[in-house]
Image 1: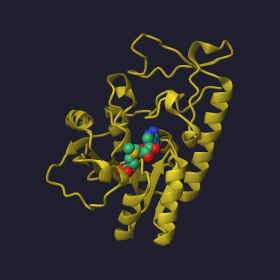
Image 2 (image 1 turned 135 degrees about the vertical axis):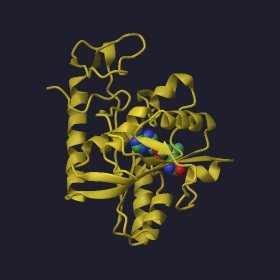
Image 3 (image 1 turned 180 degrees about the horizontal axis):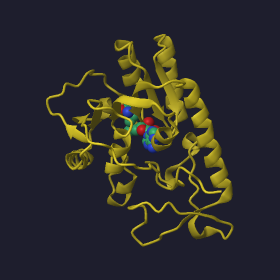
Length: 260
Ligand SMILES: C[S@@+](CC[C@H](N)C(=O)[O-])C[C@H]1O[C@@H](n2cnc3c(N)ncnc32)[C@H](O)[C@@H]1O
């Protein structure tokens, strides 16, 4: 996802704060999760107190927003990185019985998405500014996924940025914890190497299995699909296997339960 050096005003709602060794006035957070220790062996990641305060407030605000939007248990269609909303607005329009929620970190794209939704007068389509993993962690209990869509996610093509990719085993296992048997995961990208990586990840999971025969329910070109010379698609189905407990943490972000 977006590393600290690429953040700018458009994404300033989701800020970097990893101060590491730059200051002595630090709060130390350790999450102790396997796979979270950087390759150099740094076991403790430190964050400035003011950054932790902002993150805490942002997450609390997101929790309040989602508690209002989803006051009772229900199944939702979640689009991660919805961009300009072309797909989700059309999907919600064609599926009035589904409750669709799109998230993105770029404000301008969400504003455009909301305008499309309003023009189509849809009550079952919502757009929220949030980092995907923070959105997941802030969901009220009882909210489940009937479908998760990820269309043309940032591919992070450089090897040293691979860790920023969203679609790793921990993401699939986390969404599996809120997805009943038969729930669907839809993925499309123009980046073949990312696609092959995700194929391999899904093949190694117990919680999802690829379904090559599953149809793609709606062909609606997105902004990034329109720019792509070709693309690759994958549909996976939630299996009955229980999901392991996983905490999702974005790169450069403190753990969900920030120590005080
Ligand atoms: C390459 S664009 C694709 C947008 C849209 N799905 C399409 O196909 O046109 C990736 C989108 O994901 C959003 N994004 C990137 N990292 C994200 C994250 N961690 N959480 C939520 N959205 C994210 C970006 O802001 C951007 O809009």
